Length: 379
Length: 111
Image 1 (cartoon, rainbow over the protein chains, first blue to last red):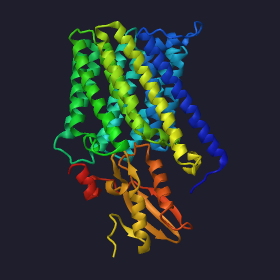
Image 2 (cartoon, rainbow over the protein chains, first blue to last red; image 1 turned 30 degrees about the vertical axis):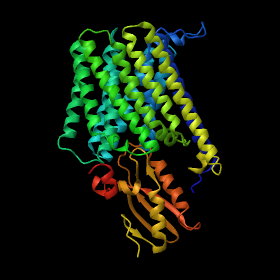
Image 3 (cartoon, chains in turn red, orange; image 1 turned 120 degrees about the vertical axis):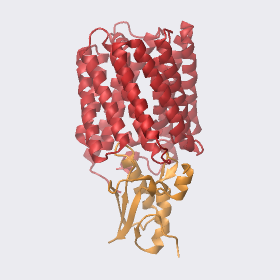
């Protein structure tokens, strides 16, 4: 096997450890901000100012910081281009700046990150001019629009930017799912229908900045339609019949699509004046997006960190916790205690998932004592 | 006489089956299919004490490519003579399409 020199190997491991620490900090900061927003009492040091910043910048830290960095690293690893890492480096810096109370710097770093992310996808589209890369590029562009609105906007800048930030995540996921559907028989009009749905989603994001109610309704309708499209066309319906990790991923995906549909209904309900904003945001951000993360982490984490994980049925525990905690949270609209309990349980579910990954990495090591250093064995 | 593998193979007949078996052991968990059934293996050539494998991916945006390449290398490690070098190359031409899937792969995906 190829065994590169020791020094670059140490440097590569060091870079991975540093990236892991920053990503973990962003996730922790995002979660603390979210818990405080949901009025969960946390034992935080009284003198520190970052929890206050985390509250103000919760969506920014979660989407532009944490998720933007994770997705950016994924894409940079795939692109095998040093320049592609500019996007996750800038988004990580943006998230850290936001947590440290430098909102203007954070906002412009996010613009830089999104711009680098767009450029990465333009070069990918040149290498592989396929529809799914086009959808990924549209997602990157949505992030750039959202980041610019946030950097240039006034007092209500967060509200106008958030639908575009979500559009970034949704189009990224939709592009990746579209790629997988290439393994299934093409159904006439399926790709066109997806374009129409995603176009409607972007229209909803634009309208939201001008006429919030109409925008929310259009955005919600697009989410509902996307949930139906994914349920209908995704390979998860097929891989559900498989075993082990493949089936677990399918369960994550399909339950995530259910939350996407619920999120769509909640967005429409907010447009009609119902106080379901928390559900609209978190059925989408936690129910849909985190279900996708739970699905792919056992595969993506080893690809990014070179640490292998042992899959086991215990992976279903954090998934069940995630869905149960979110179900409790959706009842927060009628009872503030349930909102608090649900939000806290969301954090417990995510923490449980991280512990599950850690345990799975240790389990893999124990099962493969002949390869004590997965990093060395695989490069 | 062994059945021809579903990719161009050039090398000693004795290694054809072990190599195919090794490649079939590399599974894409998202798809629940082996790289052979997805049609990602473009060719295997044994020459000058070296086994060359050309492999494609379904997307340039997929970060798992390097790991699959490593998995192929590790699988072949156990299938070919110890003194044989292994070279796994990622290629993008010709682009992958669903026609490359095996009959089993297509059946699983409901074709």
